[in-house]
Length: 80
Image (cartoon, rainbow, N blue to C red; front, side, top):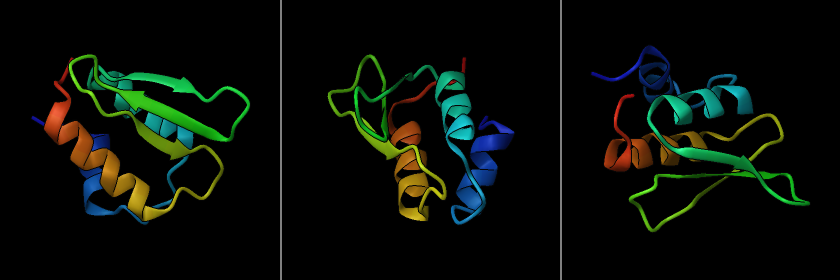
């Protein structure tokens, strides 16, 4: 069952999301989350996935990045 935060992101990717929301949903679904080194981007990765999802940490986070995150979690994440 999807979490409330993921469900809200899915319904409204253009919402006022910040990087703390992204980090929270990543950790909830077992994704590794880390800030970039010397860059304004953060990285999310599921341990079993080959792909790394890159998300800009500056606000506002564009809807395309939220949609990509939702798809990535649906493909790789498992609720913790």
